[in-house]
Length: 590
Ligand SMILES: *[C@@H]1O[C@H](CO)[C@@H](O)[C@H](O)[C@H]1NC(C)=O
Ligand SMILES: *[C@@H]1O[C@H](CO)[C@@H](O)[C@H](O)[C@H]1NC(C)=O
Ligand SMILES: *[C@@H]1O[C@H](CO)[C@@H](O)[C@H](O)[C@H]1NC(C)=O
Image (cartoon, rainbow, N blue to C red):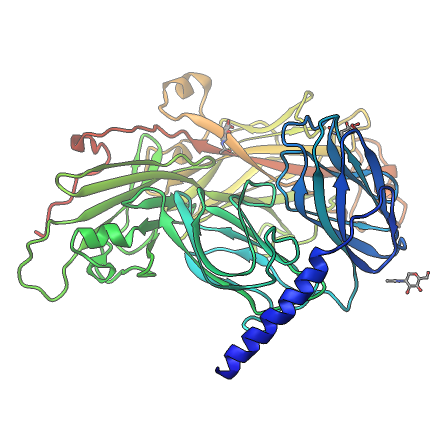
């Protein structure tokens, strides 16, 4: 036998004996208290019982409690049968109901109390938990947030032994309309039929509240798939029997066989199924964007990151909506003739400021596919120190004096130099819910406040200033809400070029407005050296020592919420190939 084989045998033998020892964890007595630094606890309960178990810990230590087995009466009602976990002040940390997922983790300083209540049904209930104190010695740095199309996750120290007391949570997010395919190349963690000791829990969603896909342990390989573009992977190890852990590779697959499109404010991501492309007689190497020097970022899975500016992407403005379109072509490499059908994949993103409905349609006869999606522009509002708009104000909160000028810039994050931003409306309110009284700075592009001033706008931004004021009646806060429009900089008829429009003209316009994303809050800064405003009769002779004195001297705090205004999307879904309303279908090869 090879040395590795011997090691394996040895490990398995050790494993078996230790596992037996763990499996024989005695049932905890009803009402028991535990004071060991760490301990596995097996709870058994009969009908009509109520037992409270106490984990005794000093207040300056944090205890982690991991439930890895939960077998209550599945037909019981949670109000009659549950396990409730309390912190040292008897505040509820969590409730495990009969239908709760069997994996749950709680952390709390000091004592933890666990009350198990059962209803009158005669049957055995079992729960298994492990608790341990979190100390500098057993801290394990692991887990994290992952994005992208493909990668590998492995246990800490892999392929060496993982440390004891590890709790790692990885959150994966891949482009919309794709899902995650997982392939475990190795799982070698402690064996238990119920995976009570060391375990891998897979959740079909962005966090551990999502439905459990599976719980894995022992020695195996495994493959599975999520239903959405999120996955959460939790790895928990107890105090003994650490083996080599696990390694899993993940990659995106489109939710629909032929492909997935996802739009962001600055680019679109197209994921194509390699099997589907192969079935048409092509490989990833045969595919390019409109500009044939732009190839796939990744061949397996086939992923195109399509920029909104470059690679042959065409921008089209219609009815005040902005569309970005590119075409993925197949160019069979190095061949003089081809017997494959021409393949074109037309991808279009419609931009609006929030929301995200993807529309997709395809026509299988002529192999022309069109996917259409919507994304949102990333628009932000920032204060600047001066009218040069060079230094953004980084301090938060930012306090400012009455009558001082506030300089603001609204910017859209985009690589497209031909977009501009227009501030359509801004109004102020003394409360964050924007109840009356309201005060208009600008409405429908018409300046309503004498101190409001527009600076020339440019590629990707709009700038304005106004004098800081406050509301009478002892309101110390001012909230601002602004609506921002994004336009083609070269379109003479765009909303951005129209400036102030009256209600009558507005009613004739084809623009449809939509408010959405809320940014902020931002506060204006107080400059103690500058002059206070005389108009509201306030004095300012106090050197401030803390924030509350700002209120005493009546300095206004301005909080800005920006509501971004966007263009409403006309969505459509048509199956006929004749329905390409927004772009001509490019012809094949000539
Ligand atoms: C908690 O407090 C005790 C005594 O008050 C001290 O001995 C111990 O080191 C403290 N533990 C931590 C983790 O700070
Ligand atoms: C858990 O059970 C206790 C005792 O029956 C009950 O008072 C409590 O409301 C239950 N909790 C929930 C969330 O149903
Ligand atoms: C977009 O904004 C509209 C109106 O403000 C709102 O009803 C909708 O829920 C928003 N959509 C998303 C995805 O946030």
